[in-house]
Length: 238
Image (cartoon, rainbow, N blue to C red; front, side, top):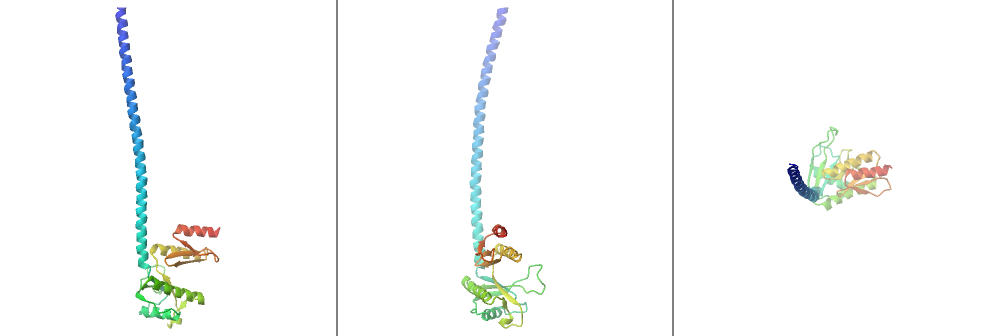
């Protein structure tokens, strides 16, 4: 009886050990498979991250190209345009008015494709103020020639151009500026605001480029955005 019990116990022990070894082997196998799957997931996540970076770079490049193309098209549309301020709304023959103004300051008759008055859109503008006039020159060269003539007159006389000096019964002063795309116009307005606040010496546009002179003796510096404007303004104030 005792021998049978011992034999049964040995058999059970052998079977248990065998089962334990099989289970241990299966667990090891599962661990290897899990480790392999984990590594595959890690590799896959890394690959996806790299692909996302590549895709983001491609998207940024496409956006930059689209923005550049859009800006080039906008700049091309306004490269021959200028804006004239100060002419009373009662004047209807705008070509004649502009020709007389140019003649009064020694600028040859401008070559213009079209000239028309815009509508006032600024809510705080004075009720009796005249809307600006858009002048479309035949070429960018012609526009720049006339703009240079206006600038030379102001530097020579240290004065704005009076309509009375051009033969009109009016004391208004007129100003001619480049026509700029919306973003550049906003940037110029911000720079002019800093000039009026005496945080910079001067701000102006030249052939589509916004320039500021931080101090009287500084060279004019081109700016592309508000961040560059604020950076230069901070440097000037320090």
